[in-house]
Each structure stands twice: as C-alpha cells, then as structure tokens.
Amino acid sequence: MSGQGAARRRLLDAVVAHLAEHGLGEVSLRSLATAVGTSHRMLLYHFGSKEGLLVEVVKAVEARQREVLAGLPADDPARAAREFWRVLTDPALRAHERLFFELYGQAAQGRPGTTALLDGIVSDWVEPVAAAERARGFPPDVATARARLGLAVARGLLLDLVATGDREGVDAAMEQFIRLVNPD
Image (cartoon, rainbow, N blue to C red):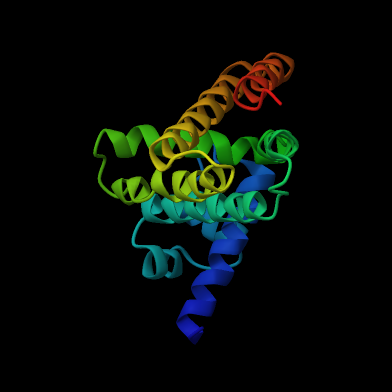
C-alpha cells in the first residue's frame, strides 16, 4: 500500500473507531478531525467531503461484517445465521447501523456525496450468500432469491432495532426467519 493509501487507511480506521465509541450525532468535519488527531483539510484531501468520509466509514464497517460472514461455518447454516445475527446486533455497532440507514436514505434520494454508497450495497452481500446457497444445492435463481431475502430481512430487522431498541422482539423475529429458511 502506498504512503498515501496507508495514511488514508489509518485515518479511516481512526474515524470508524471514534464513531463506534461516540456516535455520529451532529459531528462536524472539524470536530471529527480533531478527535482523530488530524485536520479537516486532511480528511477532505483523502475523502473529498464529510459525506464521502461517512460513505467510506459505512463501506469499511460492511466489509468487516462480510469478513465475519465469510468465516462462519458453512456446514450448519442455521448456526451460522444465529452467530452472524449476534454480531450484527452487538450494541457496539448501533452508531454504525444508524449511520448506515441515514446515508442509505440520502443516497437513495440522490443526495450529492452519498450515492457512492449504493455501489454494491446489495450485490456485495447477495453474491457470497448466494454462492453458499448454491453449495447447499439450491438452483442459481433460487439461491440468489434466498440471499436477497435474507439481506432484506436482516436490514429490516436492524432498522427495527435502531428505531425501537426492541432487541428481544427483533431476535425473536430473526429466529423465526432462520427456522423458516432452514427447516432441518
């Protein structure tokens, strides 16, 4: 990784960690820069805008979540789904989940600086899950539909959790979904 790429990665990691601990709130680019030990100009240089930085934060968090997903046992899909749900609903991720939904809505409306979030927002998740479903013997079209359904359910329940804080309710709903798609 080039020096510039390494510096960008270090800044992004620092911002991800800061937002996980403190949340987004009404944070300004200047206050965020100060909190992570840099200048707002450096953040602008590497990310273009506050929105560009926040999009990169969401993408970094999602990439980490996909790494966790890839490491789960393929031989027991229901157990893997429960473990992944536990990871997704970790209270330490709540600020990132709120940020995800806030930016997702802005990107869907075409707000400048946020639309890059839409690149791969579905396909980056559907493809690896569909591959696992194909390995379980589902035909390609069914595997893709199952993967997309799982993504929609997980995102819907995460939005419910962010909005209501009802962990017990969303956990119960996810358990029902897992049992529906894995009746073994």
